[in-house]
Every structure is written in C-alpha cells, then in structure tokens.
Image 1 (cartoon, rainbow, N blue to C red):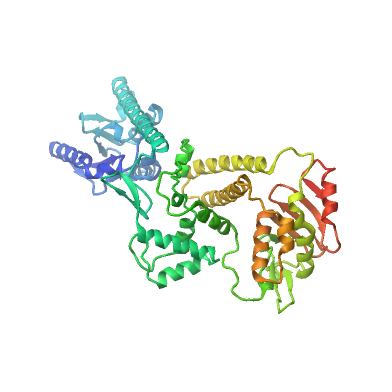
Image 2 (image 1 turned 30 degrees about the vertical axis):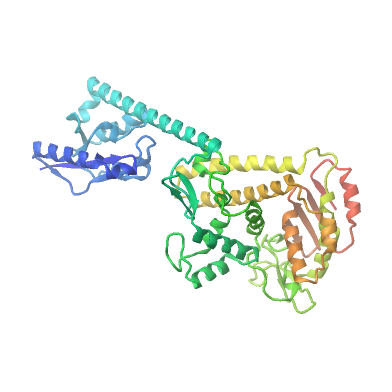
Length: 509
C-alpha cells in the first residue's frame, strides 16, 4: 500500500481546547476512507501552538523535523503529506512559503490539501495553474496573518495606553503575590505572600545571602507562591528582590521592549515603598554576597571583587589575617601554581587607596570634559540597551547558544547598576566621600562594610601589579589612573591639580 503522513498545526495554544485539531483529524480520516490504497503512517507530525507566520514551526517544531527527514531521504518518494490547507505549511511571505512547497515536491513527496482536495505532485511544478493557485493561497495566508498580527498589536498598544493613562487592567495575568478581583477588575495583594516578600527584603537588608534566605524559608516550611514547601532556591530569591512589580511597575519582557513597549508606572498595587525596594538594589548589585559573621573587622575586604591580579586577572583574595594583622593580598591562582605574582602587604595597599584616592574621588573630574557623570552613564545605558537588543535577536535565531543568554545577563546587570547610580544622582543623594570616609573607623566592622560599599560605587576595577607595587585604577565615571604607585605617598590634592591640565580620561604616574 502507498504511504500517507499527516501534519497538523495551529498557531495559538488556546486553540488546543477548540475545534482546530478535531476538524483536521476528521478531514484526514475522511480522505483515508475515500482513498483506501493509502495507509496512514504511525509517525504523525503535530505543531500545536507554533506559528507558521513567524516560521517557528520550521525552526523548532515538528515541521522542521519533517523537512529534515525529507532532506535525509528518510521519507520515500510517492509518500503523500496530508494537510488541511497550504497555509498549514507556511504563512510566511510568498517566497519562503512557495519554496517550502517546492522543496517537498522536488523530493518526490506529494501534498494533498484536504479542504479542497487538491493533489500536488512533482509535475505540478511545471503546471502554471497549480503554481498560480499555490502562490495565491500563500499570498492570502500571509496577508491574513499579517492583518491579524497588526490588529493584535494595535489592540495591545491601545490596552497599554489605557493602562498607562487610567490604570485599566490589560490582562488577568499578574505576579503571584496578587490576584485579579473579578468584580472590581482590580489587582489585590495576597497578604500572606506579601508578608513573605517583606521578610525576604528584611533578611537581605540585614546582609543575608541568597543561600541563607533560602535556608530560612525552607527550614520554616514557608510555602512558595506555587504552594510548595521546601522548594525555595537562591535564583528565585534573587529574581524576586529585583522585581519592579513590587513597587507597582509593569515591566515588559525583552522581546516586548524590542517592539517599543515601555514600563507602566503604578500599574500594580505596590507591596512596599520605593525606599525599601531601592535600598535592597544597592545590596543586590554588589558582589559581596554574605557578609562575614566573624567579629574581626580585618576579615572585611574593602576591595573585594574590585581588585584584580594584573597577571591573570583573577580577583585578589586576603590571606593570613590574624588579630590586628591585616595580612596580605594574594592571587588565588598562586596556590594552584597557575600564577606567580607575589603577595603584597594589605595594610600598605588599603592605606594608599583609601586615604590618597577614595576620599578624593568626588573631586576627580576633568575640567576639559564638559560631560557630566549623568550624561556619561546615560550614554552608556543607551549603548547597553542597543547591545542587549542585538543579542536578543541573535538568541531568537540560535536559542541553543547559552553564551548569548549569559552575555545578556551580564549587560543587564551593568545596566541595572547604572540605573541605580543615576537614581541616586538625580535624587541628589550623592555621597560626600571625603567627609564620610574620614569619619569611618576602619577598625570597626560596620565601618569597614560601609567603606566597602563606597568603593564598589566608585571603582570599576583595580588591577594590581604586586611585583612593581603599582596598580591601574578604573573608575565608574570612565577616569583611568595608570601605574599608580603604592609604595610612596601621592597626595590627593596633587592629583586633583593634575587633572585640571589633561584633556583625556587617562592620567599616567
């Protein structure tokens, strides 16, 4: 007997509960009853919820598997592909749509459209009437999909405009700590879940790591927002702490941002104040993780994650701390015999970087540079958004390439850090480093932790050459100090004076 293969598709997952699949299967059974010489193959190809307008069914769906089987010669010539209509194969532009049909027919596979009983074979490629018919169907399918797409986009744009202007709810979908009241059509907070969130924020403000918070919630059998116990994880905590929906903001996805969608303020009922949310963002953006629970203040590494080895670029660590002895900075690769940079006394480094550099950073500006720090960061954010957009497009084309997702994550981290800095500047909460650091007692643990946070906001990178006892300092505002000496005194006032005579972002020592 001859062989037949069925292909079913619909583009919207909601249609799974409708008539689409039943209708397509009934048409297949009716055709088989009328053509008993064909035997339906056990392997059916189904794309349930994948669009043929975007080509998703061919990129990652069953239709793509079918085309691969055709290319590999696994489907015998003479086999009939049963489809409801040609628009099930493709709703893309005419060129792509007709090319899909031609490649199937060239392989000797026949196509039957069940809605009108048309039977396409390799000879149809030379039949002008069959070709014109296929082109017209492809054109109609593409136009229908394009019209639907524009109508849907327009409807959502209208919904978003109304939501931004009046607060009208666009959809019942919402974060899991709230629900939609069907009578009032307004979102309402779920109090017991909001309490859990506020506890999480309180834990984080106290300096607890994501792992510590996770352990507390699981030990106390606190249900997740899916109702499960002992299933909290650090990733969930991290994501929750940065979710702007907690302060009422509706944030579009990356894909939606590419389509021009913007954040909607005051869309959700806030679960906390802006001050509480923003205070945690500074903690979240810092790389320190869990703060030391031991009492020795020297265990607080003020330049943690900032200071790098100039030889291998690994973050420097602190070693041999004992009592009042601050120990040494050393490259962690040294103990693995993968780096031979010698250790350097930590007390010397901290004294120079804090009292000769950190306390003067608010005065480290170039007179010849008219751009303010706000302008520089705003420009950088624009560049970051463009890079993220390009990576998202690339990720759509190659979703299996995990490195793209990692790059997006890193760029987004920098973007969020910059946004926090801009917020502080615009609220005129810029810290007076000179006064504040001079008031700190670096022999007190809490004061060292405060100094650590200042350093993280000021320095982007410090690359230390332990052999030459120099370092290259890269500031958040773009300024660079090259070969800054760590073995002699360089007055901060002298650096400020020198900056008045340079036009570049670099100062050599």
